[in-house]
Image: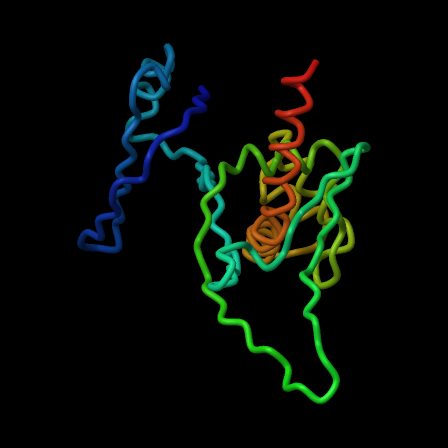
Length: 187
């Protein structure tokens, strides 16, 4: 028996004797014929993996220009280049202090995953050397537990690395996604 669906985590109840109850709300036809399979699993032990469908990252904004400090330019081949603003410094003048506002940006995880699957996402220092490959396999449906065992990581460590990587690559994925949509619109 198997069911695969998306929903909204509504609440977690902690009950006596160490029992936790998780409530997930599913809207519309998301279950699409799977309700019978789910109903047949009531009171059975099931394996569940929850992944947030969105990624939240922070973007630094220059409060004077109201523009992001970092700009993301997508080349014709799909590679995303990060441009940092250059500050003009005059000799003998004190360095200009820029007031920065941090805003939270929410992006669909699917946008990031599509970017990772495209092969355009970069490798960064500080992560497992095969993290992009591991993430590609996770997106394809392999479980965290299987991947963690294979790469000799704890499941928690792998989940945390993937979460942080998605947050780091999110602005690039956002720029790449917009570029791809514009490119497809021109075709």
